Image 1 (spheres, rainbow, N blue to C red):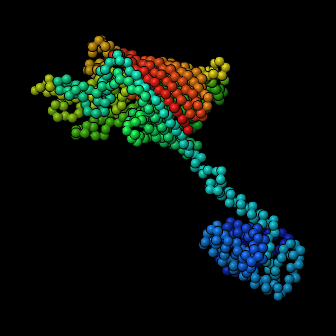
Image 2: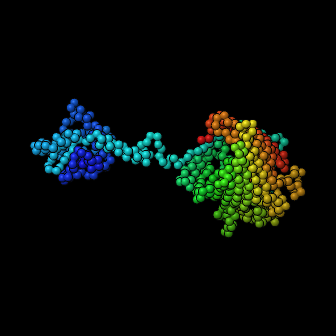
Amino acid sequence: MIVMKQVAERFPLAGAVDRVDAAPAPRRARPLNTVAVASLLSLAALCAPVLAHAQAAGGTPAGESTMVQLIRGLMKSGALAKDVGEALLAQAQAEAMANQAAQRKAATAGAGAGGAVAAAGGAVTRAEGGDVRVTYVPQVVKDQIRDEVRAEVMAQAKAEGWAAPNETPEWSKRVRVEGDVRLRNESRLYSGNNSNQEVNFAAINDGNAYDVNPNTAAGLPPLLNTRQNRDNLWRVRARLGVVATLSDETQAGVRVATGSDASPVSTTQTLGGGLGKKSIWLDQAWLSYAPLKGLTLTGGRFGNPFVSTDVLFSSDLNFDGVAAKARFVPSNNPGVELFGTGGFIPLEYLGADFPKTAQNKTASKNKWLLGLQGGVKWQLDASNRVEAAVAGYDFRNISGVRSAPCALYAGEDHCSTDWSRPVFMQRGNTIMALRDIALNPDNPANTPMPQYFGLASRFRLLDVNLRWDTRIAGSYGLRLDGNYLRNLAYKADEMFARSGNNILNNFDGSGGTTRAAFRSGGSAYLLQATFGWPTVQARGEWNVLAAYKRIEPDALPDGYNDSTFHGGGTNARGFIVGGSYAFDKNAWFTGRWISSKEVYGAPMSIDTLQIDFNARF
């Protein structure tokens, strides 16, 4: 048989025969898969006793060979494809007929050599001189065929990830899904003595300019709520991300998050709203590449790459642009790690067609953040670890610019520096009027003066962060954090000169709006102590904390820091107390009480209570 010849060639039967089928074979059927043929042969050999017993009992036709019966059974059960089975069936039937003819010829010619082979455990028939045909495969060969087929199939299954029940596809091992959910109950409590004249400059800049001429203004500008409490606000935050490790050097990530609006500093969604569906925003989308050991380049929209506190950058803030992070551990002192970070962050691009109604467009006035930081992490001993970082941040083109005179009364619909108003702001920074609006000579007193507003100060920040982790009272952790910031570009006299004396806020409350009545500053700091586990993860872990913040009005841009303390922004001072407890693995609740008031200007006192239920996966 042709199949038997293939097996004999692959597994020679030492001592059983001298040579195998040297005579020309009948015309072959089309070539078939070697593994499939060997598998069928092994199964046929193993199932032969069962099939023979079935024949004797009348269960199967006695004229069919074991191979034919097996192929028919596999086709009937669906284990063997129809076209493959039919080809194997034709080949097995042809070989069976050829074998029967050879046996009849051998019976008439005698079986002199049969006794010798039979003594060796196999029955043979001699077709003609020099030709030997084997009709029995020893058990050792059957076992060898079966084991090799099984090994080949399992190797292929594991490589392709389709047959191992406890294995997952290779690509899934390179993808990590992560996320968190937070349910918050929040109450904001305002003092009844607060000023009720705090203008919402962000709302004006987002919409139509406000007419500052009292003779033509339609009403008051939009004002912030400063006196009416907001109790039991239920809010939720959900974030879901996927991080893929493409190779040892390259990663990619995408994350989506909730959010009531496009604010960069909060992904919290206030519930209610008539039970309407909630919005999902693209929170992160980034690629990173590590060309050298200890150096990582990241681009896109990514998490904060700098060591900082929420005095400067909210914990929910993500950065657009590119960043590079480097770390180095000296070989002679593995307890020390030096690190550095650089970032080139676009904040806002000037519209390509600004001004829309002018033939001559404004040159590029893009707004940027350039950041550079260096620091050290030092494991002093088993119980003490310190971290220090110093950074410089240069905010380019984010300050307001006084415009050239613009004759809006004559039909102009813009002024030359409208682009310099912030795309997002919170509260606290010193504000200036941007437009130098020309008066109508025919009716100057009743000339409408729709105004936009910008930041009066420039911002070049020095940021110093210190952290000390230690243990006290046995095994309890204690973390001390300190953060100091100074706006090196803060100059009050320059602010008045640049604005043309059009400063609108941060005065002493006397009613004056001159330089003598102006009150601001360029410094901020945070002191915080955390006792217990710095971060809670396992069930039973806990911590308590106490902190004090002071942020002068122009210490930093008010648009990017924590949105909870004093309602977000600057010109705020106060304390925070709170704690966390993990009631299950990666599930914990947190309570915080925040009490703040103004640093300068009209009275503004806000207390905030937050109770959070958190889960991380």
